[in-house]
Image 1 (spheres, one colour):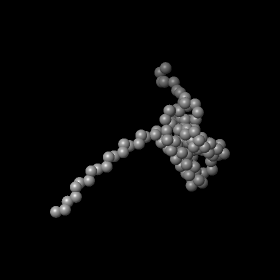
Image 2: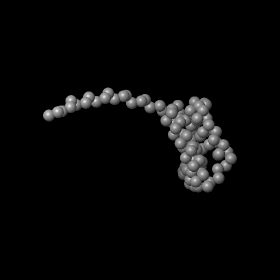
Image 3: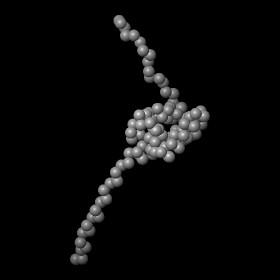
Image 4: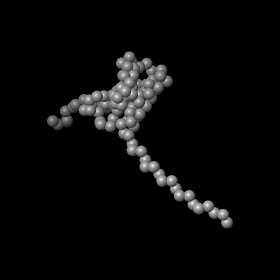
Length: 113
């Protein structure tokens, strides 16, 4: 019988560390592209400001890796500030044709006070 000796397995390379900044940058760029694509497909006319917002944020992400300079305006690992994220969600909802209702209620006095 002619048997071959068993092969020794190759040593595995350690996994690459996750680059959270690059991951956040890719996610933000994809979200911006998705919002633009939804608006184009649905035929929704974005205002001049909204179009400029999407373009300028995309440019800043590609250039700097994040779209805001002040670290107080967003989380350390995020590519968009909190307000930019909210505005992007509003633009995406407008492009999809979703009407977002305000969930806030006015301040009222408690009964019996």
